[in-house]
Length: 154
Image (cartoon, rainbow, N blue to C red):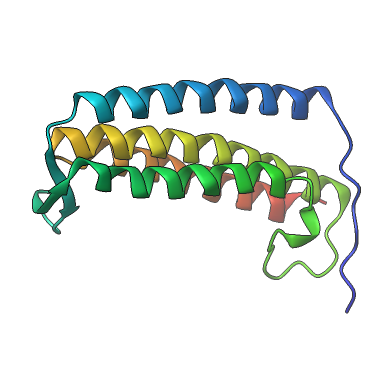
């Protein structure tokens, strides 16, 4: 079955999300650079099941997950303009309300992904993983709430 194509136009809400994203992206980049400059030469690069570091490496290795999460965040914000690529399992022909909710969910998750970028930098330098878990829990809650709203939308 052919997927419905929805055109995503410019809206005040979309503009607000994009402005918030750009400002957040700049702040996160500045924060990651500051954390990198202040980090010791050796930082935690892996955390075990207990949340304690069990591997260490040069501080440049902390930039790899930061760059990856940053790229994912940008892709999510761009992806909001292509809602036919957003996977809504069990919904064959989504209605306009479901599509707008899925676009909003992707945008919120994009901004939270930037927060995850900052949390990774923070936790890697500090040698614990608490902030990463907090952000991941927030992302999971956003997904659950929006998926419930999407399935209830008629």
